[in-house]
Image (cartoon, rainbow, N blue to C red; front, side, top):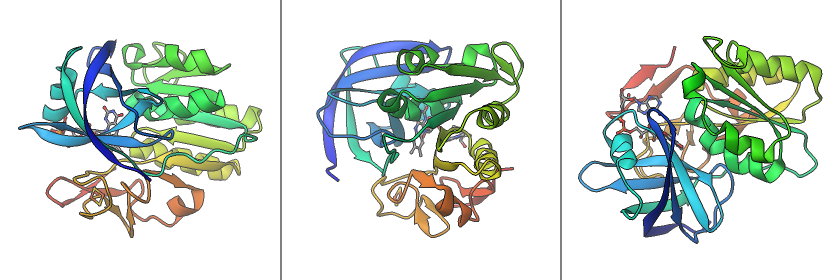
Length: 257
Ligand SMILES: Cc1cc2nc3c(=O)[nH]c(=O)nc-3n(C[C@H](O)[C@H](O)[C@H](O)COP(=O)(O)OP(=O)(O)OC[C@H]3O[C@@H](n4cnc5c(N)ncnc54)[C@H](O)[C@@H]3O)c2cc1C
Ligand code: FES
């Protein structure tokens, strides 16, 4: 697949929550739902961000958690930023499939292009009402958008996986697509197996090159940036690192639970 490195101009900026912004830019690079870009902030870092919009106008939706993500969120309309990509495999969804999208937190960003293409049912989970994002965008394309919050401040009182289990029991889904914290995805994968539903989940690992060269994003034998970030049921079954451990920026193994 073609990768491009280009400086793009920010043409739109929307606040999604207290710490999360969507930044829009014109960029012709071809992309499929679930792919990501490497965003370079000179003097700070270069970090992976999923494309929350594809087409001629693209977007990223960024939660400010540290130096690089906060620096991206400081960019204003008219500023320029350097991107590389799009990278990764993306989701592979046959038109005939009945799909349920399940998102946790800012993970919904990676799912929006697939929700737009399929019009699938969608669950967006977050810790509290103020952290539910992009539900207005999902509602434009999905007939059914359900929300869940850990504290019960909006929608279903509980987490997105508990709600997904209820929906899977009521409707015959062929495929679940998901993105969010890895422990959530681990339990989503288990729930899909219990309900005999295929899944494709988008995972995160610390990344440097984003292009399959440096090896710092390895999960067992697979590179998350190149073989993923989207992995299917059988691949996930064979990954002993999935939901259990990851490597930090120094290469140290960190337990996820
Ligand atoms: C393929 C891919 C797609 C991504 N898409 C998005 C996206 O669409 N929107 C978005 O906001 N983020 C996304 N991320 C995560 C994003 O890349 C990180 O949040 C960012 O690199 C953090 O950099 P920083 O310098 O701001 O924070 P750092 O200073 O690196 O980290 C600040 C703190 O947060 C912790 N941390 C770092 N990364 C993560 C993480 N992924 N999850 C939980 N804790 C973390 C660190 O351990 C540290 O304690 C994606 C990551 C990958 C691999
Ligand atoms: S980030 Fe370099 S191989 Fe994946």
